[in-house]
Length: 73
Image (cartoon, rainbow, N blue to C red; front, side):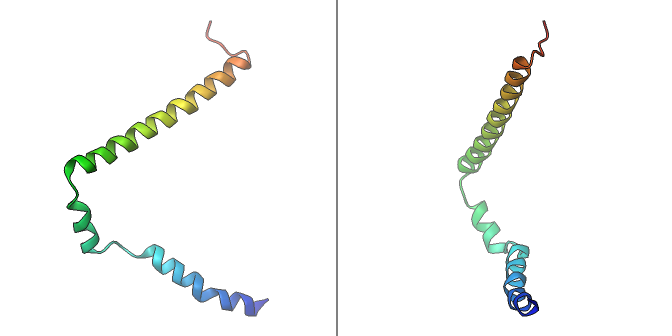
């Protein structure tokens, strides 16, 4: 059992190193070269997606509350 754990340790440490790696300056410069409309488009897409997800969750909660007899009138 102990031998199995020691065999897995290097691969786990390698994954942790990859996850902890920071973006290089080259990666950041490449991202900044994208057109402004594309960067703003992603921002808008993420915002619309999050607002849509919130609307769906709120609608489901309202549906369940109405089904349980919890109404405001």
